[in-house]
Image 1 (cartoon, rainbow, N blue to C red):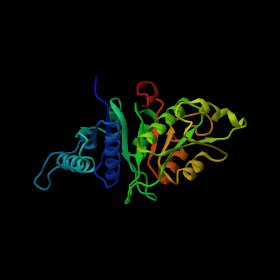
Image 2: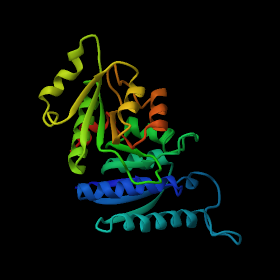
Image 3: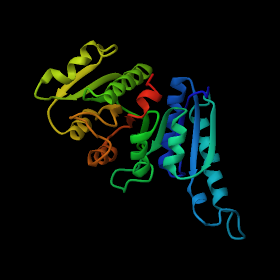
Amino acid sequence: MVEKRVVVGIDGAGDSESAIRWGAVEAAAHGVGLHLVHAFVWAEFRVPTGPSDAAPGLRAAADKIVADALDLARTFEPRVAVTADRVDGFSSPVLLAESRNAELIVIGSRDAGRALGLLVGSTGLELAAHAHCPVVAVRPAEDAVIGNRVVIGYDGSPAADAAVDFGLQYADRHGLVARIVTVRSEDEDEVASPLQTRPGTQAAEVVQVSGHPAELLLEWSADAQLLVVGSRGRGGFAGLLLGSVSQTVLHQAPCPVAVIPTSALDSHPTR
């Protein structure tokens, strides 16, 4: 059996540094290894990738990205075993394959106000829909992570149940307060009532609100270290990270965003 590990997708951009740092800390918290993966897309095109008289070549540049990321990860968490690899292929299939044996996948996002980069755009949404483990998108940050809460979007769906488990466990590992946010329906108790008997939720703050899911999550995650949602649901937060709402959250959430894909529910239960 392959040992689970935290996998970080790297692309050589400055955005990767925050993802590597977050992944290294979480690997240490889980007591597992950290694996850095660079998807080498040029292998998919008919272009020269080796060295020439004028330049060292695309493969050499990719190998430097991997080597630099490996050195960086080791400075963040020296006690964590770190490995790194360059894998030929596009980001989505490469990281989806990695997700089968990952504790979680960590990807970098872009600064607010800039166009969504590859990892948060097509690759991020692909992972949110089809990864076999939780996916975390980390925003670049100049300062240390602030906030004392984990915010969890809950609508009563199986993916939201998994999000609750993931969020509560993250809060416990890092000594944070968990806040579970639900959207009030016609029957106010319909969604939130299962939380009353769910193990671990007694110490969490459960908030029922009315309004637009994305706006509510952004508001309640202002003092959070992590925002956790399921990739699909029913009503309320349904499809949160698959449409226009997902773009809003990924652009504006002031903290990392964790997504629990439905494809991860059976193949990779949250711990």
